[in-house]
Amino acid sequence: MTYLSDSISQLIWHLPVDITFLAQQVRDADLMGQIQRNWGHFVQSGQIWALLTGLIIGYMLKSLTSYG
Image (cartoon, rainbow, N blue to C red; front, side, top):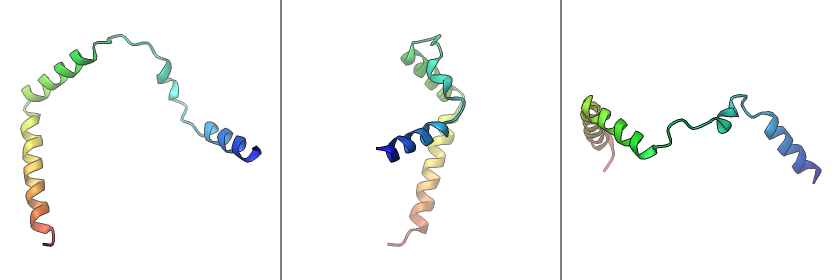
């Protein structure tokens, strides 16, 4: 049992210092509203076209460079 407790204490000792984000207060709990606003900005800014273009070109390159 000593080996297990030593392992756990070593694991806890090496945790990052900025783990305090778990104790912060939530200012805007409207998660679905945030997702909707961010998706709207993603589409409005034209980033969706860059994503789709990258996916298509990536798939074409993968198809051209794979065997069989």
